[in-house]
Image (tube, rainbow, N blue to C red; front, side, top):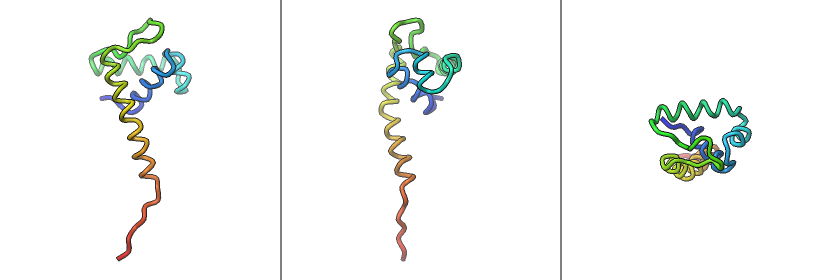
Length: 92
């Protein structure tokens, strides 16, 4: 199953252009990020990006999940923001 952290990492990869730069942005080691993606790709059954390509290139499946990240992450952020706003209660 894909998690929010995976979607955020996909966005970081797109924005940074490399695994090393994305890892630095996310305050992780490159090794940890690489293992995270290897585990995720194994669970999903497909590759998300082409390794050893400069600049980093997403697979078609990776592009689909990146589009999902671009749609879902702002919605999650807005929902969490709304949840943290003080709620007015009505008295009867």
